[in-house]
Length: 346
Image 1 (spheres, one colour):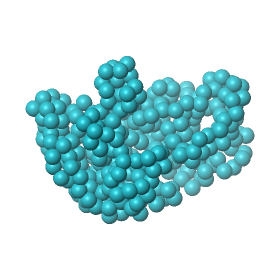
Image 2 (cartoon, helix red, strand yellow):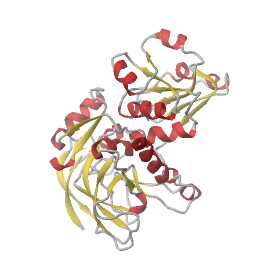
Image 3 (cartoon, one colour):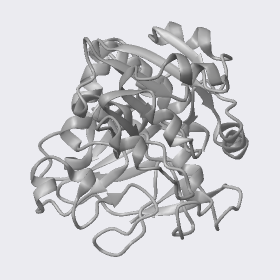
Image 4 (tube, one colour):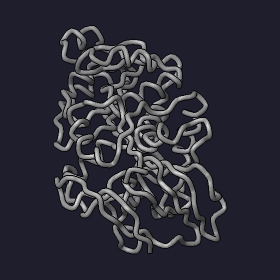
C-alpha cells in the first residue's frame, strides 16, 4: 500500500479538500499510473453530493484520467513504463457474464466496479482521478494515441465514450440527422463525434449563446429550445436525438421531433424520475432509450477515432485548489467546455 495525495469530499455535500488515500501495491496484472490530468464530470458532482443515492465517503471523484505508466506488474503484457494511458469510468467487472464476454463490460450483469465510489473485489473503496497516482488492472486501462494531448484526451474517457457509444449503436452517419441536446461537457464532444461520423448535426440548446461555438465544432444547425417555434419547425426531423443534459425535459416535446422509428437516447441522468405519455412513443414507433459509457474495446476504438480525426475535448485547465469553484461553475453552465485538473497542483 502507498499513500498518495488526493482531493476528496469528506462527506456528502462537503467541499472537497486535500488529503491522502491508500493505493494498493502493484499486482501481477496491474499498472501504476502517474496521473497528469483528470477531467471534472457532472456525475462527479452528483455523486459527491449524494444526488444518485448514498455514496461512499471520503470520496475521491474523477473518472476521466490521463497519465503515464511508471510501473508494471510481472504479468503485464499490454503496457510498458512510459506509455501514455487513460482510465475511464470502470476499473473492473466480473469478466464472466454474457455482457463482459461480448465486450459490454459497462453492462456487467454483476455490476462493473466504478473507478470511484465503489468497492473492489476485496471490499476496499475505490478512489478516482483527483489524485497523483492510481493502480489499475491492465485490462481496464486504455492507450492514448500519440495524436491526442493528454489534457484534451482526459475528458474523452467519459464524455467521449458516453456520446460515441450511442451514436455508433444507433448508426449515426451519412444520411442521418442527429440532434444533440445540450452544448456542455458531453454535448460538445457529441457534436464533434457525430460530425466526424458524417451525420447532419443539429444542436438544441436553451439559448443561442453558444451558437458560434457549436457551428465551429461541427454542427450544421443550432436552435434555441426556449423558443416554442423550434419545436414546430423541427417536428418529425431527426433519426437520433442524443440528450446530454441532467435536467428533466419535456420528453413529449422532444419525441415529437423524431422521425418514424427515431430514437431519443439519454446519456444525461436527472436525479428525479421522469414522466412520459406513451402515446408520444406509439405514434411513430419511436424509442426512448438510455446508454451508459462503453466497453473497454469500444473506448479504445473511440480514442483512436478521435485521434484519427484530430480532436479531443475543449478544455479549461485548472489547479486542484479551484475544484470547488469549478463545481459551482459547472452547475451554472459556466465552462467551455470541460474543466480538467492539472494534477501536478495536488
